[in-house]
Image (cartoon, rainbow, N blue to C red; front, side, top):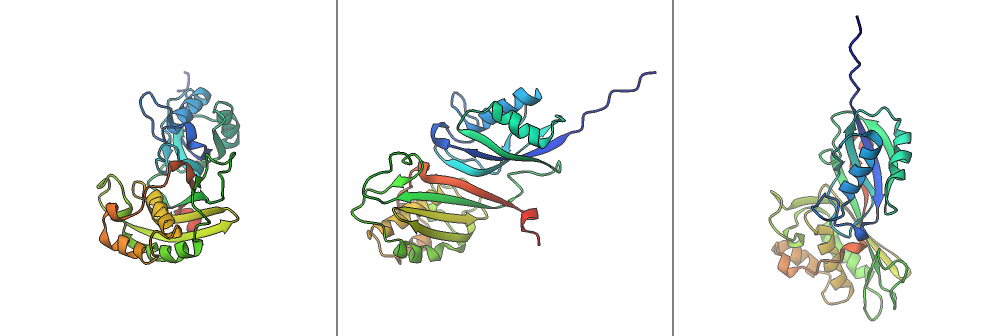
Length: 261
């Protein structure tokens, strides 16, 4: 009497992904458009022979980049995690790379389990654009450098739990526009500035709207006190422009086990 065939063990694989968003229509699969999700799923299918669903920590928009996107997918593959990294990368284009992989519990969900996300926006205020990095930073055509000290002071009112409706486009697209920013830092090195925003969640175009508002302060269009008033009014029309997508990077996603002592 023959023994029944062993049932393949189901696995939940977590990937750490980086991609250049320039030539993608965003993370999410879209008809007749190139997406990061579809590109990754196709590469995984070629390795495992399975049609998988790549579940990301969040959906980045067209033109937005990622340094630390977290993704999980279910598979019956027996390939070790390190082998999956090499194999998947062999079938990915040059603008996407899997940085690492590991097995996670079956109930791990890269989206629902995310506690915080850190986005970085890169600005360049030198006299001429940087030819080789122009796809990864917003060049500000301004006579002189942005006043990053004023921008830093203006940004302080945004840290904490607030209703960020003034910094949300296409409202309403969430049940609530209340979010908690745990860190907002502005740094400079020569002609380069970067604005780091970490929060428990983000509204549509929230970081890019904050950046556009702070740039207006840096240009001396607005006094630093105006940002607090914009936050108070809860009206997108009174805030600054939405900064271009190509300066934005998803840097890091934090999960509960990473914050444990």
